Image 1: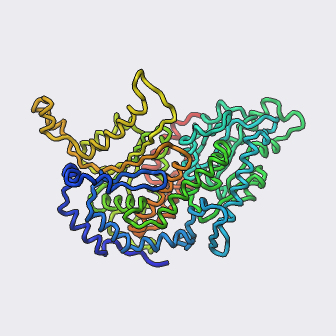
Image 2: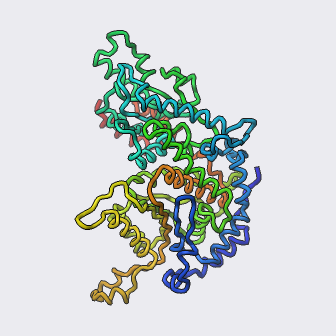
Image 3: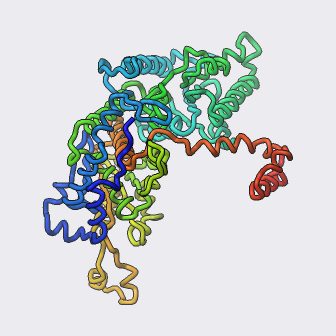
Length: 557
């Protein structure tokens, strides 16, 4: 694997550094000087309309960013990923989430295997199962049709499916819904199962290796809930046994068929994916089985098509028109040259309420690295803290800091022309009121409000400074006609590739996550102390000892 280019050694990095040293943005002036700025900095990608004009961007900066892409060999790295080169070098794996959404019949041989054919064979298996549940052919052990699908997973096996389910709820089949359990906090399993009917519940256990601590603990707890509930109803007093109940109510997303069988799940009902699919990139694989069941195979196919449209745009489009490349390069500009630390994603769509949380794993687990893929310490900043909430809620919470705080917070605003619910308040269209806020926020961030404008409103002089808005706060506006399955796939793929671009510029492996391992190892070591093992407790540091002592003194069993 070719070593990364240190971006600080490139001509483009030097030029951007010089620009940043004297950079004084003035969006009011930029728009006044160029009435076509909005048009010139707006791009179209599949169904997405992306306005970059309110970013801290000039033609010179854009040219340098595109040159930087060339100097760090971004095109070669894109081609390597799409063709199945093992760019995840610490785990010696290809990175092929893009193959999950390639159309049937496309050829891609990786490590001697025709991967697209394998993907579609597994998808057809998922779809066939989904149709059985949706039609009522698949029944619970007492003969009742399934009404609730409970997905048990964590990380990518939870964040993706729950985000997509919340986003596409209007597409759910009537009488069929989904719930998601991830946290090992027993409250999660308890709250999600307390009002369920075990006879109409189907549980999907999503763990590739079937060893994930949180997932398997929750799976065992939910299995006992189901069996004890059925036992209390007298279900097992006749010909029905408990093993049959598990087989009727549990399926798996896993490749560890022996462990699946040991749990009591029929391996025939296990749906797999491959080691070249990272967890945070897996929602479009069998990890999305809950979605295929509740939303339907046709919706899932449209979802995948949205991903693929963006994949092709990213793979083939020149940098100046390439939306994921431009947005990723802009993020580098903000992080490495303008000292931005965080990035807000602000969907003006309640159905996307979990989208920022989904992006937190995608971006921060991918690029939260301090060494390059060659194992060398970086000498520049990497990663961003992604965060956000739906508008307009965020306006009444943290927008104050974005508008008038001292930190630069680049923000992506996402909105749709058509609402799912078309309510009116008297003569006022509620969606128009909602989008009025969307448009106003990016305008206010960009252009601000001068002291002269504040005074002209008759504001007392002593509070004029408090009501001034500096402006020149960067934002990107992303719009589409409606939040459809295809559009959601496009949005996810957009941020996947933005993350990839940043990782290549920074020279980090965006596809491993060794940083999550140490905490897991220590948790396993500490658990005996939490259970009262004094010998293990004595081996801990004083702070940890004190905290566990408090727990032991106050736990009531």
